[in-house]
Length: 435
Image 1 (cartoon, rainbow, N blue to C red):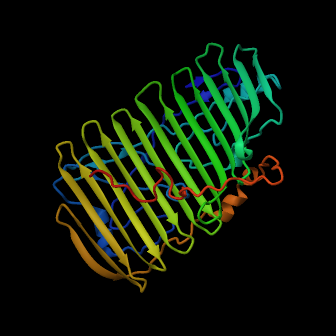
Image 2: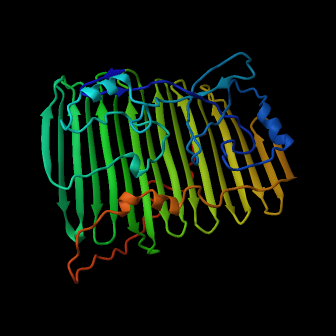
Image 3: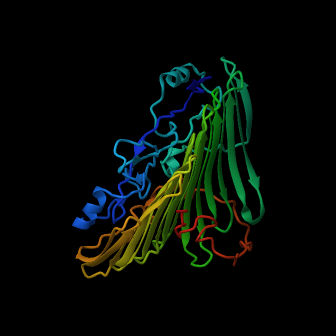
C-alpha cells in the first residue's frame, strides 16, 4: 500500500512470519548459554504423548540482542490427533525508516522535490522487534534560531517547520523542532518532533516523537528518549534509554505495541526489559522479559509470553534464572488451555551447585516426572553484552548538550525523594501469566 505526495511515500508491509517453540526441560531461547543435553532433556523435546487435543510447540529465532526475539503466532492444526501443531502468528512487521531500502516512488519523489522547499518526509512506520535505536540513527539536528515556516509543494502537498526554546526554573531549558506535512487531499499525514532538555542538576535528555497515517487508514506512533542524570541514592551517573512503538492497520483488526527500556550506571548496574502486545484478527499475544545485573556478578533474567484466540484457546511459556558466583537456579513452565477448559502443563527446574553438579527436576499433567542429578558445567552471563562503556560511547550527542550558564551562588535543589531505580511500571520481577 503506497500513498505518495512530494516524497511522502508510505509502505506498510503486512507480511506474516512464523515462529515455533520447542518445549524442553531448559529454556530454548538461551543465546550464549550453553547446556549439554542429557538424554532426558532430548527425550522430552521429541514428543509429549497426552490426551490433550492440542499440544503447544515452540521454536525460537533471534536477532542476536539479548532476549530481543521475533515472536510470531499462528494456528495450524494438522494430521495426527495425538499431535496437533499450534503455532503463533505475529502482527505486521512494518517497514522502517532506519532500515529499509527506499522504494522506486520514494527515489522518484526525492529527485523531483525542490531543494530547500521544506522538511523531508520521514513518514514511515516503526519496525517490530528492533529494540532501542542509537541516537545517530535518528539524525536529530536542532535549529539554533526560532523558525516558523510553512509552504505548499508543486503536487499540492503542504509542509511546516517550527523551532524554539522553552526556559524554566533550576536552569531548565528545552530546545525543540517540530515538522510535518500532509498530502494534497489530506488522506496522508506525518508529524515529527525533536527535543533536547537540560538543567543545572546535570540532567540531560534527548528525544524524538513521530506519528503518521496513510490513505488506507494505517496509522503509527513512535517515541524515543535518552536521559543522563545522577542517581539520588548512589550519586552515580546513570544513562537511561527507552522507546515506545505502535502501529495499527486500517483494513483489518490488526496492530501491535512495544515498550522497551534500558538503564545503566557507572558501576555496572544494568536493567533491560520490554513489554509487547500484538493482535491479528481473532488472535492476540503478549510478551514480557527482563534482565537485571547488579554490577557485582549477580544476574536475574526472565521471560513470560502467552497467546489466545477468540475461540478460547490459550497457551504460553515462561522461565526465570538467577545466578551469582556460579551458583543459581532455573525454572519454567509451558502450558496450554483448550476452548473446553482442558489444561496441560509441564514444569521444570534446575539447581546449579557450582561444583559441576546440577539437579534437574520436573513434572507434567500427563504423568511425566523426573528428578536427577547430572554432571554438567554451568554457563550464564554475569555481565550484560552491552553495558555502561557501550552506552556512553553511543551517547555523544546526549553528553554534548550544553546547559544554561548558572549565575554565581545559585545551586540546584537537592531532591531526597525515592529513587526511580526500579521504574514505575517497568518491574524487574517476572509477572505471572494466567494458566
